[in-house]
Amino acid sequence: MFIGNRLTDNALTADDGKALIERALAEVEREYGWTPREALPLYRGRFYESGKIGSFITRVTNRDGDAAVLKLQLRPLPYDEGMIIRHIRPQIRTERVRLPSVLFDEPWSEENGYGILVSEDASEFPRLWKDHCPTEEELNRHEDFLGEFMHHVLPVEPYLPVPDGSVRERYREMSDHFSEIARASTHQHIDPMKVEGMREMYVRILDKAAFDGFHFTHAHLSGMEIRIDTKTQAYVLFSNLLWSFRPTYYEVLFPFWVDAMGIRDTDVSSDDLLLRVDRWAEMWKRVMGEDPRERESFWFLILERAMMTTMLDLGASEWTEDEIKTKQALLNAWKRLFETIAEDRFAPN
Image 1: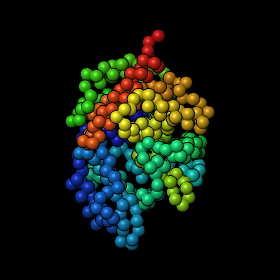
Image 2: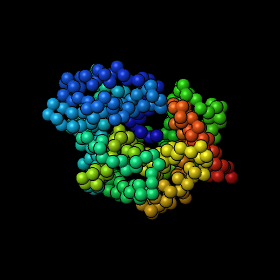
Image 3: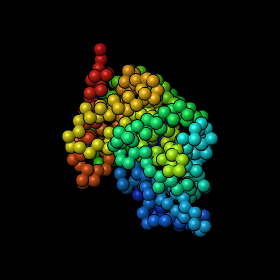
Image 4: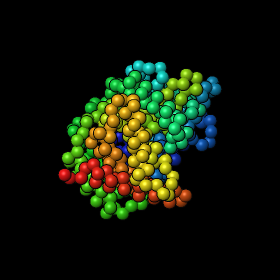
């Protein structure tokens, strides 16, 4: 969305990164003494398909036996994650939320072709959610985290300037950007003419919708990006490249989306997605004392998320053979959710 440090700018040019990863690991070991502990990495950050890799994360040890996590940033970025962590950590006003400790980092450079971030090994800390669909217990814990984050972490001073232009202009720019990525994908699961019809409806709504502005926050606050320090019980935030400018309610919009995308049911419907909208809206209401469902701007966020999911996240992403039936059902549910919100919330008077 309104990132200013937009990672997806690399989606059209990324490759599998294999040769670069091999070279980078050898250079990191030779220059700094950090060696991978396992043959397989913890994570490969991909752009919608397995052949486009943006980052590589693995556990490492050094000559002294110290353990850490190494992240290789394989694509150019205007901001470095180590810098972001160092900028934000001192601003947090609670001991119950923290960012990982940085041991060493080098930003991406054209000369190297990669960047390095070596941080504390928090990979064994349990995630706030064990899976993409949280249990009731995990939702209660997430509500505790959300209250701490909203009241004792935010606001923070941004590390990047406020985006130029209006919120409306940013939404239009984002729609064009992700549409380009979707059209270039080799994976097409929905008729392009249907997508174009949705985009036309979306733009008509966008031109008239009400907006609340945007603020600086962490953009990936699902329970999959939050871990729990087993010694202190503090919440540890990962994916810190994603601190950016986002619209109001984004702190529940993104976890709602991850929650909904975790559904694996061939009978899923738009009503199932709306039930999840309600539970995350209720959480916001309890934490912030305001019901977002009373705001047109909140429903526009859900509409926009349904549009982008139908067009790209499901409509033009890579599916494995065993995912086809459940993802097709989920794609249909998101498309119907878009249509329902457009009809019920934004139909012309």
